[in-house]
Figure 1 (tube, rainbow, N blue to C red):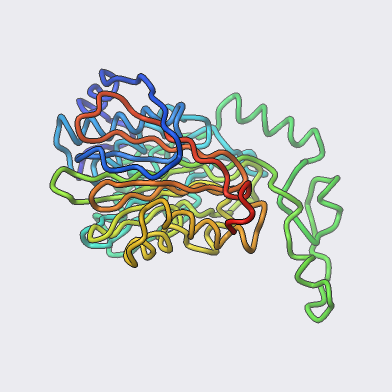
Figure 2 (cartoon, rainbow, N blue to C red):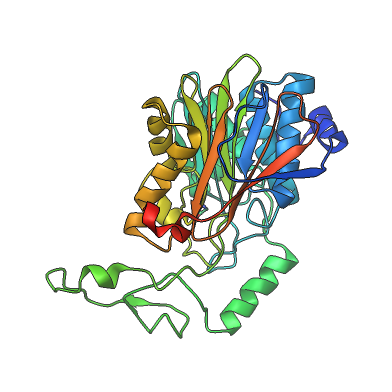
Length: 364
Ligand code: GLY
């Protein structure tokens, strides 16, 4: 690989910023392929810099699909996109930003990922190093940082003035909201340290006690699928997770089949949303298996999202699914999801708006 080390974007990034960033918009019906190469990812708005970076790299530099995914996600890590990717976002209870990322090769089905990565900005670059320089799939925490440093990445403080101020404000407000349940003092009104309260797993309301008190903070993500003009596919994800998370928390981002998934014989998928719920369902794995059974990408996406909504009606989720020809569709719940794509000879990125499935209860 050697394309990137800590945002040494070089000529491919230059291509990115000379690309058109004008936006066109499309509705949420099924979409036929615009042709190859193709870059497609979760979210529009500030995330289209990633779409353009990956697409232009595929088109003009004819990079590999893996390189395009790495470049696209790295672009978001470097400029923070909407704040949910890269350094300085989603500080945890200790005010630290930690990163989750994965990258997957649709030819070999090999994936590399990092979870709760500390002090390294270019998380998807480290995930790529896991893929290319180990036979493992995931490295986590401080040891992932050690691995990154030994592979040439530079350790840096990921806290910014904004993330520090945001965290200080949260603490001053009694650490509200937060992710703790069944602890004392009452996590609905107090900061920790907390101690666990006893639970009786035989009681009638035991399962209801295990539900969260809501979704404290946003948890967006960039997840991207790239199709090289040869048909080779790759997928990847990068995120700083969920704001106010309990230190050590890992979301769906680095989980193969949850954050993203790709089988070059079938298609690829990228996800965003409440990772604590989504990783229980492997929605991207489900969507690609739906494609394998013959579903159109949009139907495949909707089926995967419905499986989550049936159990968690309020879950915020969004997945974008693309088949190996480049036909694509998306589905989401709990919010209005968008995804962006650019392929074939398109001279601008198109953003597709996907209304939440929860608004169509009869479909569930
Ligand atoms: N989807 C990002 C997260 O929940 O970690």
